[in-house]
Image 1: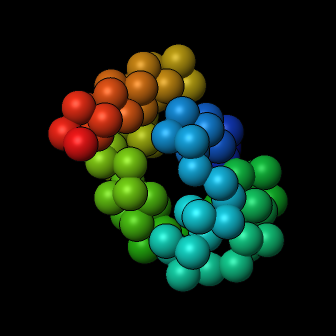
Image 2: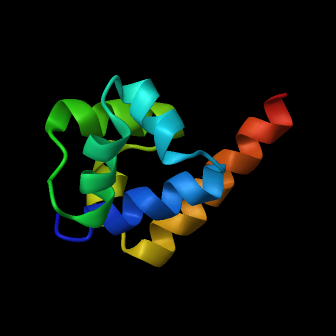
Length: 85
């Protein structure tokens, strides 16, 4: 779980979302979300579920995959999202 913040930041960047947008989606302040990305705070299970819903990524994948694998998965989800529109 130590690198979860790095993964969350990378996924957010792939989707092109701002920290403010993601924080608003999770109904928390931007500073609270920033602490999760920076590793100052570990996201709660509830928050992780919200984030995996936003990015359409399985919670288990977010936890288990390394940074390069989660980046590839996020790119795939972003492409799928763009193709649907």
